[in-house]
Image (tube, rainbow, N blue to C red; front, side):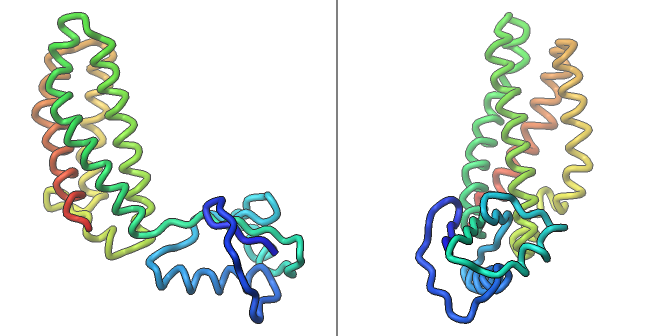
Length: 197
């Protein structure tokens, strides 16, 4: 049997494991001790979805069995949060320049900032979703006194309005949303994320 973690082969000594499920159970109990968990499983090159898990787990181990696990740890998420915090902090400054850039024909610079904003918000949402695998971490994500769901209920419509204003080059609305709505929220997220260690 060959076991890979995040694409890297690892040495493994089988004890009483006879099935794929036995290996996964053993691995998950070890991973839990290190604040880590499996987020995707490939068996012999095919990804195992939740509805196929029971059948895959029942498969007997052979010398040719290949198990590849995609694993994430609480530490990985915290490190990503620190990177996101730095990006949001930088974007807060850049957003203030967007209205002037749009008015002075520097659409390319403005567009680069907006693309970076979309990418980083998407990255944050993805990492925040993964943090739910570690409830203590997820529950600590209180931004401006709100849990993540409530925070994004307010933030999402603002981002939509911002996108609409960008499309019609409404520089006044873009400027107001950048300075008074989006920038301060990015700063709040950044402050929360930098507290993790």
